[in-house]
Image 1 (tube, rainbow, N blue to C red):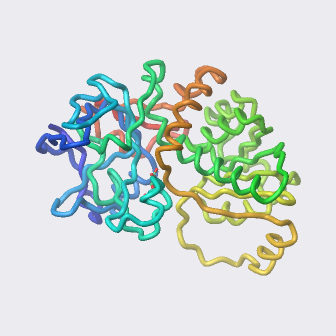
Image 2: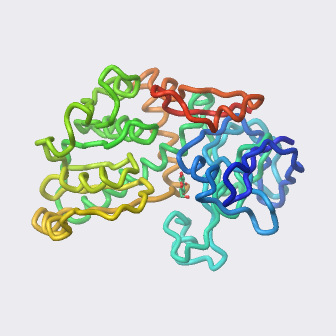
Length: 355
Ligand code: BGC
């Protein structure tokens, strides 16, 4: 079968390879992959900055955002049938089976020895067939067959937003009214949609003009859109109950904490490049203390966020009709696979490889 592979650490090693078909073992599912989304993490793996091959394999099959159909159910596997539309989670527990992995929350793994499909120590889903442990797979209704590949990025938002609510509701009475979303990539737009669904007034800020597709998609949810080219973050006067940082830019992340209001919360989901700063650390910490603020980071998502994500994907599809389909701007057939991993035009949002 055909698979998109890299030699981790080697830039320029991206290739379409003929590899052996996987065979599902006890408790596993063999999946016929329909679509694979491409994100910043994939591009970091392609550039050789990130990624780890499975033990004993010279290459890593990439791809962690996926949508598949069950091709074959492994022995002893229950709850699935051939043809089910499914999405597997990305992370699998550590060999030590730490406290959190044991509790089904490998997204909170303590040892760091977890494995991630298509990223770290486990082959991914950018191949005609793939296998995974059936206890980490969710089923999707047929109505989501066109947009279900957006489930994995939505789960990043489910966790980042969900944990903000958990933290805030545990520490005080909290009735948030306003949210600021930084970034209008797929994660920023999905965060905008989810926060609108939760009833918040949302402002989405990005570096695109107000007549760009990303701005239009944010507005489609009823959010206000601000182009930082016209209104720099430092000039924004409003302060927000919840700030969701999805640009992955270090300087924007530093600004983010200034934009949360009294008792506010800031959720960070990017991977930030190191940048020696001139930021006044004393000011940052005093702002944190005097405003009872919380700044926290969130990575990955466990099965519970995937389950919530399926329900929310259906709600978003119903409430903001056309939004999800328009987030998928580039559908690339396998025959042109290299295009999926090449730089895109300014109006591109999510690229999806179709198997
Ligand atoms: C994936 C997460 C993963 C993270 C770090 C993200 O792109 O969506 O599932 O945990 O990268 O590897």
